[in-house]
Image (tube, rainbow, N blue to C red):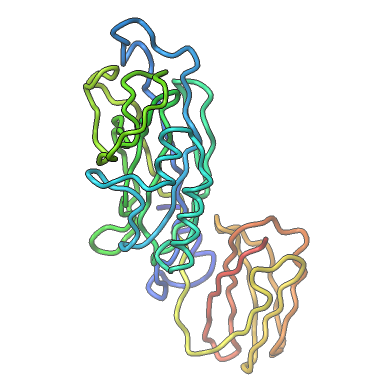
Length: 301
């Protein structure tokens, strides 16, 4: 948490005035799927073993994209059988429109059975603190890894610093094939998603691990002084306007580095040129002549 402490100190404000609105996480998937850990009973471990893209969503407690014992959606079926993500992305987009998800996560694939997928800079809002992820075990009839609705906030409302999860193979319940290269054999009726740990061709070993590491915590305080910031998201410039006299405006990037600062002589409007700034999340600290302050979130596209 040292980075966070230094970040807020740089803003010149106490931690007490902030609500912890946004956290940034790094997600690391380490594969343990090989013929050594999961020896094929007929010596037919796939030569082209690989993983589809690691995809998912952040959402609130109403959001359920998949669950053990439930039936796979069309999007989950496409990922588990084909490694195709478009239908699942549409399901996430629908959830965003309905207000119970806020982003689709589009990670990398892994071209080998063993290896690592890393998703860096995943920004999670406290209103959508649950994480769902999945990837196809490929080739396979309908096998995958998945986590469902993992909470990133603890019971006290604090961001969890490190979550480590052992991953086991899941059967999506949509194809009745029994081996990696089985021909398509639709399961009718569709069966619930199930854990197939220890079911041939898998051993009792994990197929991978997932590490969810907290990197930074960002916050926005509540103030009774209004500041109009436009446009947001921004590209070439940022305009701040208020009816109160301004003393100083400071802008920090997501890791707490000061990228712009403007001292003001009781102005009520300031324009900042932002072409040189990289895309991403920024915190804008506005100090009023009255001694009060406000912090705003802004995003550069």
